[in-house]
Image (cartoon, rainbow, N blue to C red; front, top):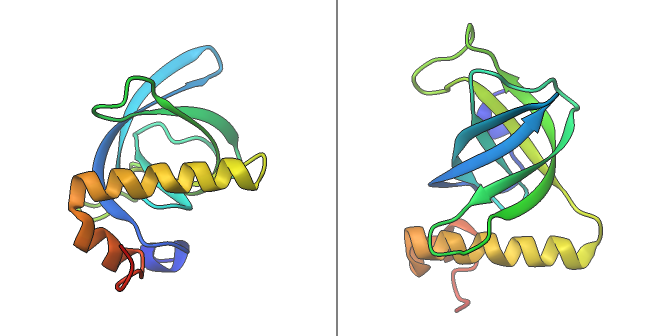
Length: 131
């Protein structure tokens, strides 16, 4: 699958620190894009496809990290990586309920607006006439 075929939502190019644990080992990597449905975590140590885990996104000007639950949907190994597609893992956000989903989507939209500007964010999210 190509990158565009794997995604169901528009992603924005934003750099965020990501922290997670795997078998008593703490990882601090980063993500370069995020959407309301998921993110791509750039790492040379991706988790296996199907792995569910909790991770925290450190967002500038937000006092507490955003804790999310996700599932690894696809992986780019270090052997497969290119400059255009670095090593890492595509993460689908998992929600306990609709309220959690709506809250996370609102935070992602706000983050995109802060980093990219309101006009570009609205265009990326398909909300051209909304404010």
